[in-house]
Image 1 (spheres, rainbow, N blue to C red):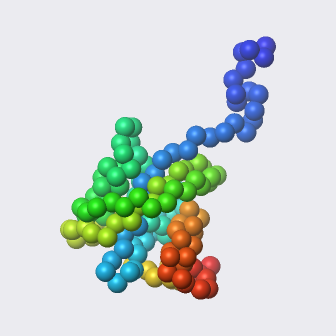
Image 2: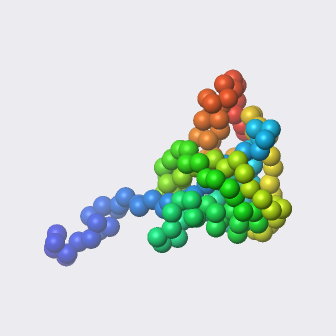
Length: 154
């Protein structure tokens, strides 16, 4: 095979992976607690705790994806979406660009439509284990809230 016939995978066994964009909802209630959900059985990192959300579909905005995902997963309709932080996380199974958005208003009853579990949390987070991509959010909360000490157990 000549050099001109090689693909990037032929010449670089560790070719860069393109990130998948994910909309993530950080729901915050009137008491300042934030909602975390467990990853359902059958998914990568099943049982780990995270903020709810999901992948953007082709042509979808972060806000539209977040609205769709939170309705599909939790059965709620969210109010205003406040873009907050973006974090790139390189997991063994995927590289993801997490678009974290704060949400202070929603309506509807929470329904765990993927058989996940939900828990309202404060710092330090009591649920465990926490998904690695969630840990930066806990640090951001600690900075904003002037929290001293660990942000989570484990």
